[in-house]
Length: 219
Ligand code: E4P
Image (cartoon, rainbow, N blue to C red; front, side):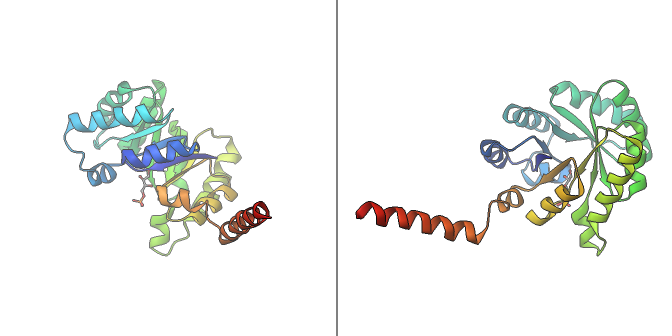
């Protein structure tokens, strides 16, 4: 399973990269705004800076919502760096644009997926990734994991190569459950990735090992 970090914060991207487990980054307009990145030039420079940190898979989201504009913006983003994956919203013009961009060899990530039908449509259009938002479904008392499971079944039934990129992750347990269900990728805040490290028996076991070592060294 690939691990992407879901942030536009360069320090957090570097920290995840240093851990040695990072396969990519996803951003969105809200995450860029959270880091105070505004204005076309700053946004472009920020994507370039992210591309310098990671090896591949930097999702950069279009803000256009019409076919012609999505294509123009998407081609511009893709031209910044071969690591860029153009993130396109699950709307009618977005699906058409995904078909066009994938035909041109530009990788796409269809975002804001909340139903299996939306994922099927994006896969048919040739999306490289679909991003089902499981946390946001959980937030409204739907089971986001069921969506991951349904998409996995559909893609396996027909051999779609589109990768399931589980997004809107809220906890380490979300990551583990996505892995159990066969999601190809998770994109997560740094805290949930680091949360996978933690177990109280690891901490107490290590403390005991070190204490025993010290005791033996003194004998
Ligand atoms: C997906 O790529 C989105 O950036 C993200 O996962 C949304 O997460 P949120 O629901 O925590 O905002």
